[in-house]
Amino acid sequence: MEATFKQKTVYQIYPKSFLDTTGTGLGDLGGIQQKLPYLQHLGIDIIWLTPIYLSPQRDNGYDIANYYEIDPAFGSMSDFEALVNEINKRGMQLIMDMVVNHTSTDHAWFQDVLIRGKSSPYYQFYIWRDGIDGQPPTNWQSKFGGSAWEYVPALDQYYLHLFDVTQADLNWEYGPMREAIYEMMRFWMDKGIAGFRLDVVNLLSKNQQFPNDTLVTPMDDGRKFYTDGPKIHEYLQAMNAAVFSHYPNTFSVGEMSSTTIEQCQRYTNPENNELLMTFNFHHLKVDYPNGAKWAIAPFDFQRLKQLFIQWQLGMQKEQGWNALFWCNHDQPRAISRFGNAKEYPYESATMLATAIHCMQGTPYIYQGEEIGMTNAYFTSIDEYRDVESLNAYATLLARGLTINEALVILQEKSRDNARTPMQWNTDENAGFTKGVPWISVNKNYKTVNVEYLLTQEQSIFTFYQQLIQLRKNNQAISEGIYQPLLVDDSHVYGYKRIFNNEKLVVLCNFFAQSVEIEKRLIDIHAYDISINNYASLESTQTTITLLPYQAVVLQC
Ligand code: TEU
Image (tube, rainbow, N blue to C red):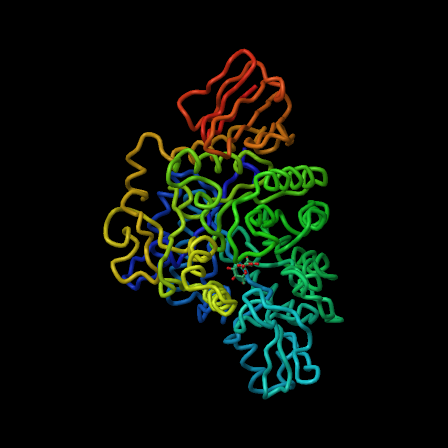
């Protein structure tokens, strides 16, 4: 029987930082092709590539200048076709990152408007508004800092950009624009890919009144007027009908910025014909003091647990489906954030993996997570590349922080923590490139690298292999219902997964102290250990003890 999507695990590749085979210092498609056996050895089913289309790379490819071309920095269209072929031949699948909320201002559509003004056929492809008394049309803030509107003297109007000033938002109200996007998506599906990761796809529909926001908290920046906006479900249903429904088992995962459980139930309930699953980020804001990203605070474990429980139960209730993840190219490394990379690298990395992989939903591994890659801890602003980090640094200094204070915040929060090159071996530049890497390699690559881990009988890598296989062989994980356990425990995140007679109990200790759990609280008697990140599990007649960062999956 063919595996259902629920048994599959996704691996995210950030091509620019994966493997360079040409000496340019940038990763390329050839590098991905070379490492397919490695990914197969890990056991993954689906590969997600962040954008590789033609782009000026102001936001590392999320600023697309031509949807139909591969950026020459990564390779050619025939390299891409060869890669898809090879992935499919090996029984894996490819999903591409699709950015349809905005294009680069270098895109021919936008350039045509700059030349022909309102008479351009592409004028309505973007969101143009008049200013008010010499000010932008609204006070909405760009997610990368500053106003979300940019004035263009030639048109005497402003265009909307929720992200960088070179990322102009597309006007989803305009039918011909939507059709052009659907046609382009079919072009990629016809190349044999399995589907898409859809960038900030819940931001497509803007409130056409364009009201001002209050700017009282960081959340009052305009987002309530375009997040899960008025016509978003209509647009996704139309996209599904025009693209996904034309191909068998199309994979679609929506990246949902600041969304709600209710909205994600609607996005993913199969009856609605919108998306297969959604990413949300609430659990990755539990270390944002009062919602502020660029400030440091320890993570709030109770809040994290609450969010996991609410989202698991909420999505389950309405036949929704979660994408499960700790890491991606926008997030600092989970081990540095929620684990303990210094004293318990193996234990905390594997505990975090267990917590995510055994929940209801589809697990995603971000490149390097499977070997315990950590934050980079750059000590100079010159080492940073990310536009958001550079803007934040300038804002922090303008607010009166010292250089050192600002750098300490970037060390914990910058997206570049996820973007340092993949650490393959102990060669120069961790084996990533023979040239000059576009961003510095993490200094710990001599001890944290693939080659070394593959020589170990037991490692973070082998633990991920086990988790991936467990999902394939165990319907309680792929299909089972989720029930929370130990809801009030201050150290342990626990849950049950049940499918017919199969019952699993998952227990994860998120701290460096041992904790004792009373067996009666988790309704457990006899059990077999399916997964354990320690050699044994201490227990008595009535208790189980979890050692620092211990994680176990018990079959009951
Ligand atoms: O990110 C959208 C998004 O909202 C973020 O996770 C964003 O990076 C964060 O809020 C900044 O603090 C997606 C992409 O994943 C990201 O890399 C792009 O920069 C962004 O969209 C724009 O396309």
